[in-house]
View (cartoon, rainbow, N blue to C red):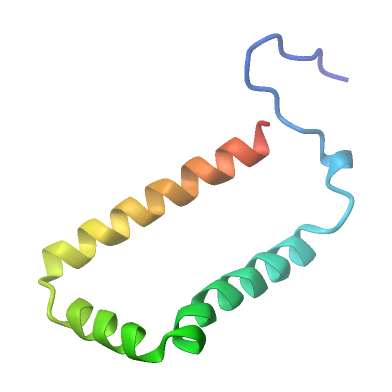
Length: 83
């Protein structure tokens, strides 16, 4: 067994993740779908207007939004993994 790291970031052991990773993936996908569905359900006209504005953005603007989203997601996953 490898010695424990003394650094600030300690990785959780695989035994701590008792539900399978596939189950966690399905749970994460379900949460994304719930969050994505909230705005069209609660405020369809606002969602439609926002979607229209997004379709008018340039490719560079959309890529920047995508890059920021990926960065926030990676930081969030790392924070959860090493918490």
